[in-house]
Image 1 (cartoon, rainbow, N blue to C red):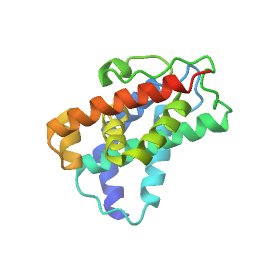
Image 2 (cartoon, rainbow, N blue to C red):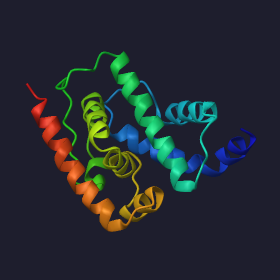
Image 3 (tube, rainbow, N blue to C red):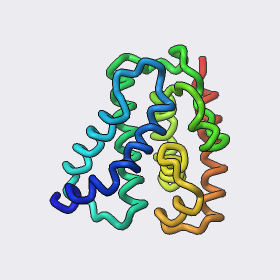
Length: 171
């Protein structure tokens, strides 16, 4: 825990950038701010006792996953479970394009990602790192100990699978 306390000031800026990326996908008027998201993620990170941190990429992948979980939990708590609650559907065509997109329906995307994880956990990790974590192909490959070619294939297949899953779930 002391190591994590010393680490936070060093990574706070990157965590804020990551939180900002997550918040850009949220609906307008969301009650949770980026700084609160960073704080909540930090509290959850220090509560995790059994993680053997491998490297910087592993830390940020875990932080990104926790931020996703926090936002999905908040959306579900507010009653935003409906797939078409006035929000735009998530497009996974390109992580950079998605980052600039307005509100996304994270509850629907979370359901689809959970289904993907049940089928192929590695592809789910690739999506989390690329879409939510803003990691490049190279950073994702390094964090997952895969080749860049494998990450490219997983990213392409996961996007197609999730697009089908999200379009099939529409009424």
